[in-house]
Length: 205
Image 1: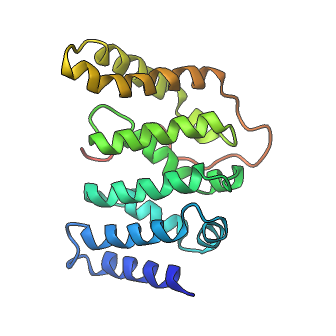
Image 2: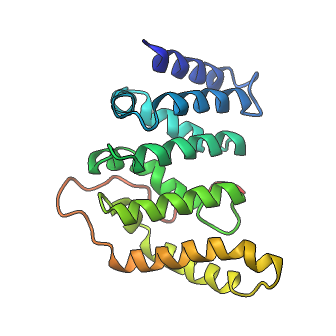
């Protein structure tokens, strides 16, 4: 009933004002409301993805245009993961949000990222590779991702005691991602993705 448009307008108004929501909490609430309204609901997901502001909204929330507070990035990444890994997701949707996916790989799937953002990012990468609908965006960063994974696996195998238990979950994710990357193949058809070069500077940590 127009709620997606209304919430999107509220979000972008706060971006334009650039004063009242410097900590990102209001925009994070907007993103959370959108997520609760559309995720796991096929029709709502399709309606959202067809709106002209869908990609811009998630690009903004993740921090593609400027560095954003962690709380907003977390909510935005949660919504992105829900959209790209839902039962109704397909190759077209994954390609639509490819810049968001690549940015997530470049900035959040790394040791220096916030723990929750890294966990969400690794989960997203793992699911995208596992479902096999479209791996092009991730394969565009394959070499860098493999190098990062090997280094991280070596680090996570070192801890002992309580730290070892904590590291085991992330270690398992990285090891599984390495296996899936080795098996992944490019999409058989479709237009080439317009992605930023791998030399693009990472978001400030």
